[in-house]
Length: 258
Image 1 (tube, rainbow, N blue to C red):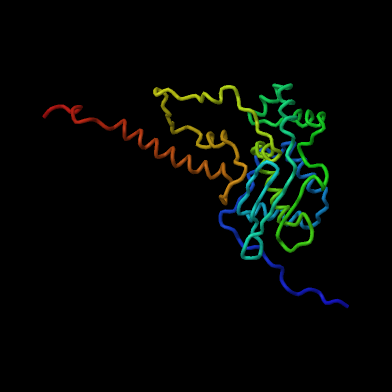
Image 2: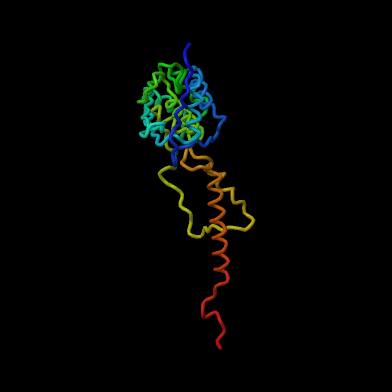
């Protein structure tokens, strides 16, 4: 009769300032499809461990390039594991021709949107934006786990899926697609000198952070928007104090002569 294992599982080393998912538009259709594809690989417990790694900030670095995602994931060892995900980029000429034929899609991509119609148009052209089979991706990790995806790869793919929900340009970059620039991109608007930011005591301190939205991922312990709200409130209080002080200030010549 085999003896049960008595040794405690090795825990991953804690990472200070690791990348954390920010959620963004969690209902985004491409995020749902990416996660559904990941679940279809039947990873078992490795997928749950990978999700925990992503949520806990175990990913130290992540870079996205055309056809490639590279990341460092901190496990139980002193050195982080190097993870690499590869997928052949889409044919640039074919995508360019498609966007020239459908200027509305090109305008939506330029506005940082990713409509489902773009995916449908790619399919009609015989192209796939997202992986559909295991063979569509090449998965590499230098850990000792024999299974692919391992939990480190799962962590990176989960973080990437969440990051694309906040910034779909990451997914386009991975697939080798450069969103077209809007027509007025070369002429950014410059605020006139007469425009002055005025802060009011009754202003909602969280309004500006909420308009900015979530980052794809960042290194804070708290969600980005919550952290930014606190910083904005402190900046608002100091700006209001400065405005009050400026209103009370008078130059020497403003005082009556003795």
